Amino acid sequence: MINRPQFFLLDGKTPVACSDVLEWAAAFDISNRRVALDDIDGIEISTVFLGLDHNYQLQGPPILFETMVFDDSEHGGSMRRYATWDEAETGHRWVVNETRLFLAQATERADSLLSHLIGLSGRINL
Image (cartoon, rainbow, N blue to C red; front, side, top):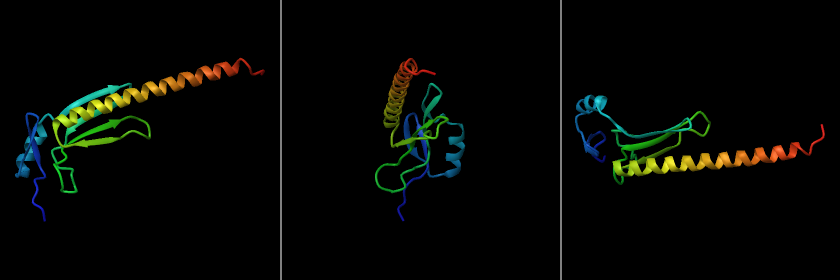
């Protein structure tokens, strides 16, 4: 069995292993774990420090940060995970940019379809 720390606290933006689960729970309960939060047209993008190692393969660095996308569609809930605060900030910005791009492209397609349908309606004899 590999002896690997599972619990972590933040010292500023740096994760630090914590071997005492009670100390971890008490500190984790009152800590600010938010890396970033954005709302883009009702789609919430949240990046947080998890405090628990989510690298279940036990190879490589601990995975301690997560970006989640929350919306009301069936496609909501996408997730990305990271090892460091800097990776989490970069990943959060990437998800925000990709979401904005997706929304812009969807709006452009909807506008194009609407224009096409309006054009068709002028040619239909009812």
